[in-house]
Image 1 (cartoon, rainbow, N blue to C red):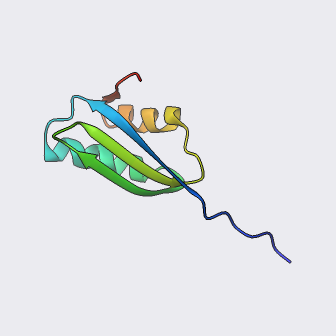
Image 2 (image 1 turned 90 degrees about the vertical axis):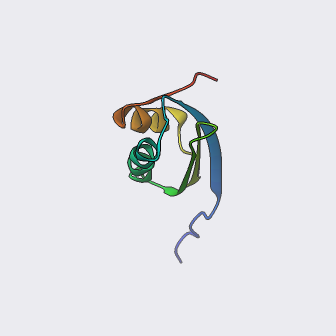
Length: 77
């Protein structure tokens, strides 16, 4: 019998520095969506927030690297 797969999800919100337009948001979204386990990415330009939902627990450092690859940075908590 196979082990049951985990269906738990984790949601985290981050502040992205320098994101000011829809193209900025699209670039960040595209990079974060490529991360393993990500099921949902929501960006709010007005507040500069990035909300990521993933299977299991996605490390903040992993999200930070994707945001930096897109040309932006996360605010330090």
